[in-house]
Amino acid sequence: MMRGLTLLPLLAAGTILSACDMAPHYVRPASAAPSQWPEGASYTASRSTDVAGLPWRSLIGDARLQTVIERALANNRDLRAAIANVASARAQYHVQRSAQLPTIAAGASATIQRGIKTDALDANSYSANAGMSSFEIDLFGRLKNETRAAFETYLSTESGMRSTRLTIVAETATAYATLASDRDLLKVAQDTEASGQRSLELTQSLFRSGLTNAGDVQNAITVVEQAKSDVENFTTAVAQDRNALELLVGAPVEDALLPASLSELDHNIAAVPAGLPSTVLLQRPDVLEAEHHLKSANAGIGAARAAFFPTITLTSAVGVASSALSSLFTGGALNWSVAPSASVPVLGGATRGNLQYAKAQRDYYLALYDKAVQQAFKDVADGLARRGTITRQREAQARLVTAAAKAYSLADAQYRAGTDSFLNALIAQRTLYASRQTEIGAALTDIDNRITLYQAIGADSSL
Image (cartoon, rainbow, N blue to C red; front, side, top):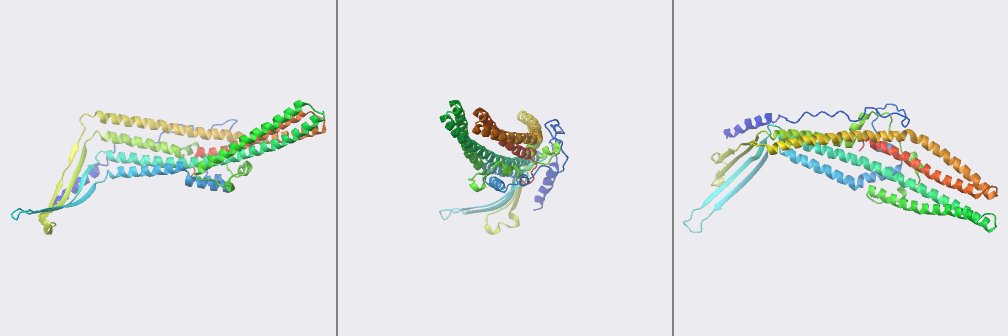
């Protein structure tokens, strides 16, 4: 019994030696993006703020859209796949972690032999044992670094899942705004069709009276038919927008939750805080995902280096054996065994190749990390460039619509009074139609830009 205690010093020594770590010390790479945001005519001066990003429930003030986004986060299939991927990576980490711990197994067996003839020998054999099978003493940190690599892979999938959630919020909000925009464009086309139809009827009446020519009639027809074509086009777009929204939500969306117009959303989509430092991008989920991949590759170098050194495994068993079941657990029935073994690569071609591969993978993920940081900076810079000018553009467009509406009202009145030609009324009507469409497009661009900046900064801790 006492000799079995000699295993303890061996295990203790192995535990102490396993503190050896051959992975390079990880230091976060210097940011590949500028430390300051761009400046110029496209950018507005911003005040510094301590708030990083914006929770999506603070971004979205519309109650119906909040409900739609909550459903998307609960039902979207891409998100479900991402969550399953996280669970898979977590399970793989636990599998790899178990390699650092000994496996203890217990068993029992019995053999009973009886002869057919009366003079045949009878034999009984009973045994019970418990032991540790193929436990590697991690002297050089190979298992430790493989476990670390698996852990970083798990963290990368978790960051990827957060990035997916962020994308779903942004895409759902954008799809909702696009649906509202196309509904507004459909309404403008319907209004123009009705207005054009009234003008056409008046022009046909004047033509029959000999007060206008056939060219004016045909020009009036072009306005009506263009509007009719646009009505059909936007009717299709609205249906397709709803299909896209329901795909994101993962279920049908009832009419009561659909947007009535873009103006309702305009005052219910907030803007992200201005003046954020560019270092906030290092916490963006896709950047964190890239960094975890880099850390995993760094640990892979340590595992590859450790493969050059001896691998020591230990197998032990403690058990009892007896020819009689009644004496199986008596002192004389005890036996134990220890079977240590060691192996070391002699010709390390594959081992050296694995190390070179691990280093190349580290360089590969370093490049991807730098690119992720640069892409994040570009995303935010593009959003800031649009944000710096969109308000002035919308104000100018609103003035254009007002002027076009007045011009058309005057031209139409003069035409009906017979003091001006139909051509001037036609031009004014087309100008108003186009300017109203552009105004809706500018409003959608503004809303999309707020959503894009929310996604680009990516610092939504509520996800």
